[in-house]
Length: 202
Ligand SMILES: Cc1cc2nc3c(=O)[nH]c(=O)nc-3n(C[C@H](O)[C@H](O)[C@H](O)COP(=O)(O)O)c2cc1C
Image 1 (tube, rainbow, N blue to C red):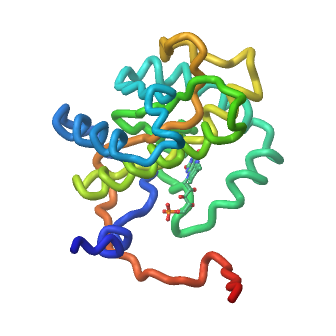
Image 2 (cartoon, rainbow, N blue to C red; image 1 turned 90 degrees about the vertical axis):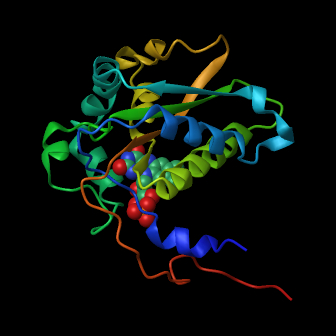
């Protein structure tokens, strides 16, 4: 059997990318992995992916986050939760303040607006994003979940440029996955069962 934990050792969030583009073949495999993710009630038609390589679109989408993080207290509250060494790097990407870290591709995960099962859209998006994140690892690529940019767009509607994603009607963008060749090659990490507290019953 395939040992998932061997892949998990290589998984981490990448926040610094080289300029090398991601091949179409790899993007297709990542989309295949998204389609293999579990989705509530098998409602795959409620999910939509948008592959964005256009830097101008990413720059426009990033404006809301830049604006939101100008409020240092908010920035500290949110980014402060990300601890070194996994946290944002002090490289060029941070200087540019780009919430997509200048990754060559960002895949946005959107969901049909629904009120039948409140919250399931977030769980579905996370399942799909994680499947793509793991496939990126297996392809030797780096990736990172993107929450902040879309949250900022929801928080600051006047800076919201998610219209650029040209989503089908009634879909809302929930999160993204920035993907590229990581500037720092993945090193296997020691796994621990101590990060998440567990209680047992019975
Ligand atoms: C739902 C979710 C949203 C996240 N949003 C962001 C984000 O907007 N920007 C970012 O740099 N990292 C984001 N991350 C990555 C986490 O910060 C990262 O997974 C965590 O710090 C653990 O580090 P590791 O992935 O390297 O193990 C997000 C992760 C998840 C699961």
